[in-house]
Image (cartoon, rainbow, N blue to C red; front, side, top):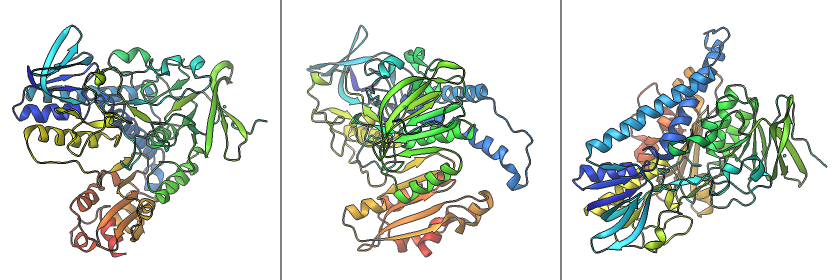
Length: 534
């Protein structure tokens, strides 16, 4: 008998387990694969590790503008992948140690809710039965894989059912910026696979796409990891791909799509993005996403926006007649087009993992995900849900905070979840970061707002460290109250300075109050104060 059972060991599940264990509760945590979930094993951490290697290569290759010449800068793709694996192993080990120190019993097995008993909830994992007074569901999400015509022939493993993460740790994933609505990984909402993104690429050096009258596997799923024969992949398979493709089509221009575009573009892959929406990065600030698109267009990324993918076909790529993929799509004018590349990445969105856990045995209320209140309580007393499985704000840091709220409610501590200051970051080069309302969201809500913005070049440190770099800081202010309700940035290292805006929005600071905060000089963070003054 346990005080608390948790299904799913991602950023929501393991944080809940650690907090509850530290508070003296007896806790059992079920995780079929590795602790850390999608975020640690095939999302946030491995992608950031790869992106940092790509950034270092960028600096080495273009160091001349800083007066530093590196002759024949090169990279070793195999060593980049090995370092990624090393980083993941180290951090997974850290999570295991946290569980041990908190006295949490970790059961590495699929878990299914069997129902209730007098003492609480009954959970079965393999042949064993567990009973707990309270239950937290943190089963995460999985990649949306639309049933494109041709997909079943080219990549049957990716079809629903084959890629199911039943019982896994997928607690969180990065998503496009604003938590308000939805799980979308690309600009398209992740719950609706129909009519997904479309855009294209060049095939093995020759420009394709003319109008035509086309995780690291983790835990027990390691066998699905991509190899040289995989043509169509999700984020999981492409993280395990054993070589750099010469050309890549990314279907979906959201956060994950843009980060992989950034990584492979830096290493010399010809990249194209096909996106159904008229802009990249979904609900993130339109002005900033347009600026990022222009920067990557200059770097050679081919954007085809407002396009709808209609089919996937096998295609010749180079000397091998069956070595590539053709993406058939309709462009914004309705023309049927075809684009070819060596590989295709599906980066359309994510949806909550709801099947296979026995939720129906408790009649848990679900929509896009499990419905919860501001204390993370479901409609079933004693049952909570946190992280991606709620289908709302699919971000690792959201999941962790939701976990704290759920555990506090179990402990009788007054706490509630608020989503008005959840930051979103895109780890491209340059980075994008935002928190609170965008300009368009404020307009849509009928808020009379003031927009203050300034180029990042007004920061001396930014100019010193970003030769020829572009960027902007944009602050959204409610005129009636004078409070800061949104702040959005483009430029390195905005991922590390956005938290000051999170604090300002969370505490309800006015522009005048924030202006009185002293920023260290010289730092890029000073751009926030300069924007206020400007």
